[in-house]
Image: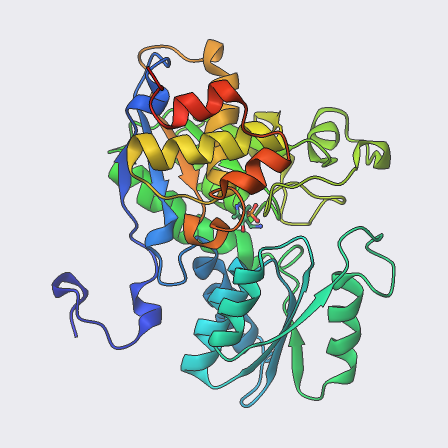
Length: 342
Ligand code: PMP
């Protein structure tokens, strides 16, 4: 079958080759063009399809994942979605652990794709036996013929972006990209994509967007793992309370933190003003970019990654009551969103 006619042998073949879409109203205050790499066009509606399939393929090649095996992972949903798609095609069972902070929709979607999902408490230390890390690690020792994915330290994660996301952006911008902006969690997207782009042009700036409550920004700036930086936050999919092995500090030029409120409000602006129905972290990424606008000039070409789709956040960021309860919508914001009352 030929991909150019958009006829495929199975759903996995539709992963990648996502569009780059120019932003307008939301970036009207920036001096240069800004393009979004819109990753919800992947079949699992997120960028994580890319690394999920790559991690499975590498594990198969290394003999870690054997026929009829069970895939075990701690996942907030998006990685689980990609793993579940791969498992269906390749005949594996999936068991995922996730936290009670994540949208209920995400767990329900994973179950719809045949995965078993175990919900664990969010506000416990990673070492706590109840944490989603600990539970997934324990299951990996107990379930026979199982493979523990560990997206944080599994370097096939960043390899997927080095092989796919980076080359796509380079080609789509005809080598004109000057800045890559990525909201970051495991570090796979920013490190893999950034490494490829810097190999093409070392002058490309790679900016990481982090959340308040994560220790990554301080680690990047000082090399210190400072647990005093860590506190609960609401934004999903970005920031960490440890430093995953997928990070390579040499690839990243700058780290910027964004508040839960600014990320959520910006996600809604992207939906309303650009017609691109994005997830929470896309709002954080664009908000972070706008915080850094004084570093940009008219000759720059910015690419910002939009990791996932808004459908997973309809009960949260796209729900007025949820936003009001957290103080994320004030009168001015409500007026902005509905285009003004006057
Ligand atoms: N946004 C969302 C919605 C995610 O699920 C993730 C993955 N944790 C990220 C951003 C960050 O991507 P990465 O893990 O590759 O750093």
